[in-house]
Length: 453
Ligand code: FCB
Image 1 (tube, rainbow, N blue to C red):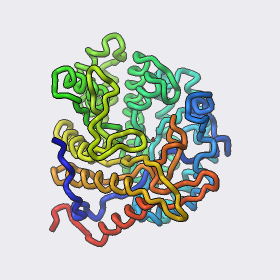
Image 2: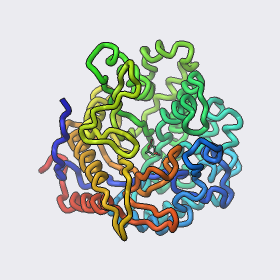
Image 3: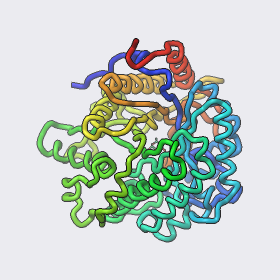
Image 4: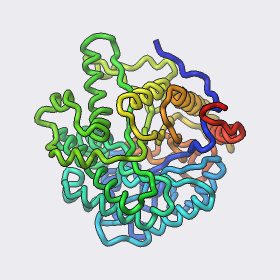
């Protein structure tokens, strides 16, 4: 029943399509205690025994903070024309609120100049999970005051950096922040309270809305949007119980975020399911959340397959599994993109993350990561198929530029197309990086147009 993606036709992608790689601050920067940076909830979490495998932390990570020039040169070697990164809120506002730490902003200021000097388009994310610990001490995202603190932070960043940005993303993956951070407890701040998690999800969406309002007035020319992690959810069996479960899971992952952002309400079936755990929502909150935005970012890794009685049931995995245990399922990307376009009529889309962890072996100057090459090739093919079906996609960002701190799994999982030897901090382009560079170059040679003319 699974449909393989069509072979990729490079002519599907126009000349101005953005090809990039993505990172986030806490996963690569290191320099956790330098130049006035304050602690974030991920510093606290990773330094709490038992939370991250082998006690790994982001204290050093890829030392990107000190190697930024070398890393920007590497972006040039990759041949990308865009770069997605995040700003560490606690570098800019160490206590989460004023005063500003000038050295923190200076770092991103230099990075932007370096990107523009190299002809790369900067895509900035404001919140990739590193809330200043001082705000967590006051309740974090469960406290509605954090919404205003976020808007103030957005303003500080936009005033200093906005003149050189292609886009600003308010939030990366609010589902992860709310559900993995506040319900499942496996990510910072490590809480396990579903009622609180749902209230947090609502506050994150409100902070997105307020952030967009503030940013519009300061940087009217910068594209503004949000990044959601999404996937199709399929029933393991075609019976009523699995279908009902798949419907609910889809509600919690996709519709819980897409409906308020684009339709102005939460999905009723999910509200019914949540009962007393549903968040407190005022009508004006929903108006705030539904701000016009210029793009929607989609992070896609795999699909979900759900079985009503057996939560550990594994999907078929005809194309195998990654080192995360995630099924390789490129056609799910086409399915998701086509569905979102038909049901929500969203603004232009970017694939803001897509990639895979595999066990890599450094052999001299090479890493022969054939599985990652295949993963990228088939998913770019699946994106091309969605474009052929009328989906408006403007860019693709491979996750990730570098191997990095993979949250609760520390440095054990390698997602980079560039290998990082953590003992020496040497960077080595994997075969997937060479493949991606050649693929992007082939797009330029073709000079394709969407119409294929
Ligand atoms: C996404 C995150 C990103 C990275 C990838 C593997 O959920 O946004 O930071 O961890 O997964």
